[in-house]
Image (tube, rainbow over all chains, first blue to last red; front, side, top):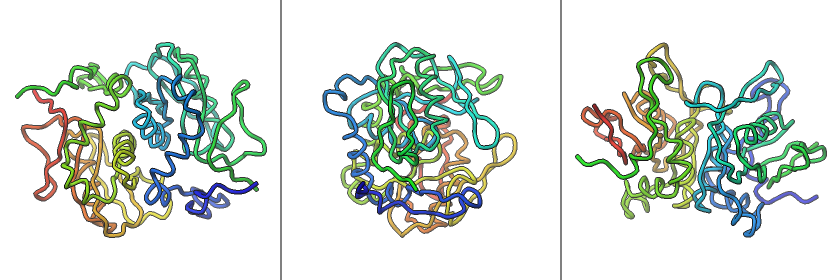
Length: 172
Length: 172
């Protein structure tokens, strides 16, 4: 499988955030190729699909970067999926497992509109899966899930039958 | 002073995040008037100024929402100002005081380019001031600071002689 041209701008940082982990730093890509990156993510959905989508949800905090630029481009609303305690008037929360311990995501009440979830990267799908469940729990109609980088493309995470769309697939 | 029309879409939430605080929730505005909000922030800088600006920095995490959409609109790079421990290859960090305790912001190495800082809201200016100092410390040329809501417009925060530009001014 050939790599997407944007892959060359990722910076691989060994031993971050802890020893043994090879971190894919998107900073050079955001700094020098941002519009190109957003256009590549936009192309994950067809024009017909974009016409059906009502709002975009960003998963705190790097998911905000992609949801926000795409919401502006397509004139959609933006909805926040936040870590516990950050959002007022929370309607529901869903917990998920981290390598050590657990975390929770929270959202405000939805309105039945069609929503797409965005994050920078998917590995095991823990936070994306929790966010997808949360979107439905608060009353959105989950239309899709997307991210810039899929680290586990050979064994991809699914939410029910829905796959996560991604621009860059990295795997061993 | 007349209020900006976007002010009506803010949701005032009493006693969040703690008793006695009246929180300005930007969620309805992001959900239903996002493009209008971003265009209002864009108008804080003239076309001549936008032509001089190289990149936009968002302060984690709501600052990412504004920096990102504006970076896409104007085809600029986006740079992250993150909380401690989130960013690899950190060049410098600057601490600032919170009501209880302190926090630190971190950035990667800059390149002398002209940068504008974005956040959702400014109150005392603690995090904006730290981010401004940090931009200069890592080697950016600080061109401006902007936010959606200024809570202290009668007694505004300045960094050296530079004021924070804002769309909505709220004060007692």
